[in-house]
Figure 1 (cartoon, rainbow, N blue to C red):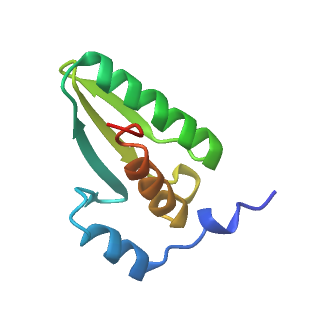
Figure 2: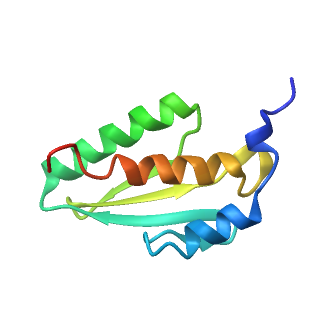
Figure 3: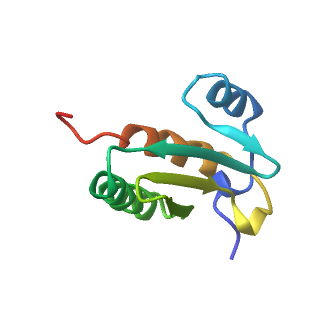
Length: 104
């Protein structure tokens, strides 16, 4: 079964746009990484839940690290492609969109 197209190609222009957007995403080898900090544990865990929902909807699953009770580090890579693909860029944007719940 072939991989979905968004897991086989990488739009370098879209990647450059994301990295220069001052949203905090950085490239670390074959991964995109961003650290989010919240007021406390409850906010961090709520964010992890929203990321999980967005990842499930995208059928693309990041590594999620809850650190020091209020910091969440997200690592995106397409394991089957052994590096970055459009799926990672798309999910990074979805994660930014769910960073803060509506009305916060």
